[in-house]
Image 1 (cartoon, rainbow, N blue to C red):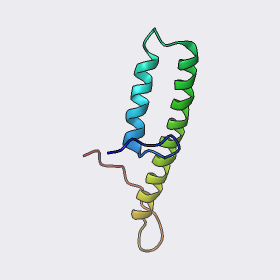
Image 2 (cartoon, rainbow, N blue to C red; image 1 turned 45 degrees about the vertical axis):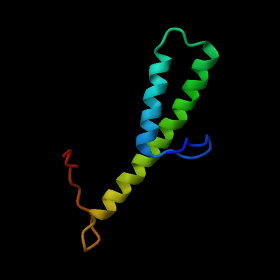
Image 3 (cartoon, rainbow, N blue to C red; image 1 turned 90 degrees about the horizontal axis):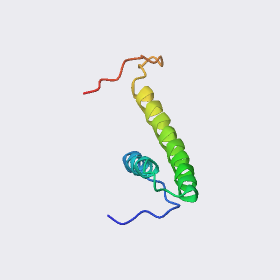
Image 4 (cartoon, one colour; image 1 turned 90 degrees about the vertical axis):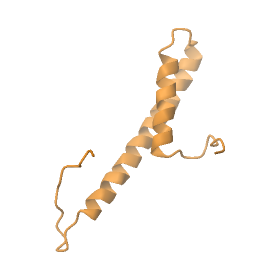
Length: 80
């Protein structure tokens, strides 16, 4: 798999993995201030993208759960 360009959107799983790496790097005491700010900014952007992806996924699930009469049935998500 090729490396994603900076302007390409990552999928949810890849974004979460990148966020995890950012957090790990930020937790190291040797991170220079400027690098920490860059990482923090990148993490915020990734967090927003993940939030948007989750909202879209939730909307798709809700659409799939709509009843034939047009009403929606709220059901808890099965974690399995």
